[in-house]
Image (tube, rainbow, N blue to C red; front, top):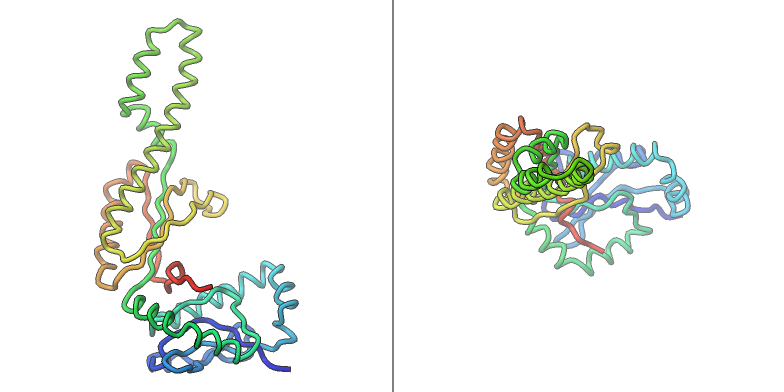
Length: 267
């Protein structure tokens, strides 16, 4: 029975810098990760036993969250190790080929696209920015400073007691609407500012508090592809934003550098 090939990523074939990190143990903790060259390109792979990692077995394994977390972490750590020494096109977790022939066919069919993509990613890093906000603080600020709210409050002041109660309830809803607008406008405005440092951006879905484990609300989540020389000014803008907006309840969290997970679009 033939061994399968687990694919971590694609690099340039002449990337000698990887010789210092290869080989290392692969996802099965048995076979070793190595570089397999195909013309101008090379695949970073490890062999897998088909009896243990065939399609049916993988479907069963991925139902086990402990297994998924452990192996996904290995995949991520392996890509970080490769990324630290070369430009790499990262593959998704559990990208497995039935044979070397099928992998070779893919690389040969997409050779020009892959080579061009490596050129585009060279000298760049992916960084992620998440913006959080203490919603109660923003609610208070909007309630005090928003001109629309102030005008509505003055209008309510002259109403009868019964009408005033109903309109006050509506005012709270109006404040919530203005808070949502402020969250969007503030986050988008900061995004527009720091986008000057990036070549590409990928806006992602905000996570809820159950996922983040934070008391603050996430209101922005975006990945940025940065040329190396732009990383420092990008991070300085984030540091400055935290210093200027921290007391108002805003928190800017940058993480990276990562392989270009969000800027590789291969079917």
